Length: 349
Image (cartoon, rainbow, N blue to C red; front, top):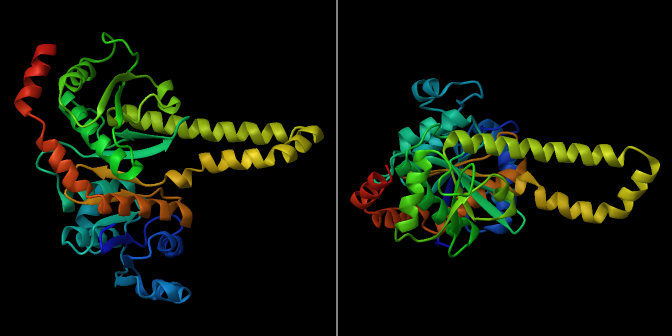
């Protein structure tokens, strides 16, 4: 890890902020004792909370603002009216070089708009993408885009593949990620022309990962690939479907074990195994979606996250800074030959 890492926190963003943010910092300090934090928010509220944790005093600096981005605020309003908000000032700290990354559990649309405006796009990236990871049968699966771009062309998908592979190496520690394109079938003839064109380029390109080909929806949790690439519309639908399925599964389990006395007794015998499963599927352990393709690191925590979930999002930000995520994207994207990509895609069309 770098000698000094500073993370900017939107201390007022999220359903349970700012208490959740301070408690999240406390948990993060146990794992990353040398990281420094800039907390942007109401000093009158934050100071008493930090006073309850003397061990955090030397690791945290409060930057006062009594303005915040509400959950209902539209992205356009955030851009116009949120210049002194905790979210905007935290992003400014990254832009100015005071912090290596920003973490916020606030308004998703506002964070996306402000991140793109303040941090700006990398010169080699056409569009940003939201990337996150979740469990599969073998480990974890990285997926992008999860909602930043409703429609994408083949070049966008190729760029997402490169950024997703770098994320898998930096955050997941996977040396040679297997990358696949989400599709309605594994056969080469299936799917939209955009997806087939991107596949043709990825199949022939000299890229820093193993291209698997097409992957279907059921292959995401099976662990067929380490990185799943798709457009933001399909990615967001898939993500929300998986979240809903997990909740439905939990509901059925509770319902089943409450159905009779014997079922309750059975649960007592199996409680240890169910505890392990609950830990494996705990969404707090997979919190922290990253807006990649920008000149700075912006991490979105779930709005309803508790301290453990927020500390996980902080850990994602720290891993990306420590592993030089931005420099690695610039390096890998620089290896792509735009003329070659254009020629290959023309051949597919």
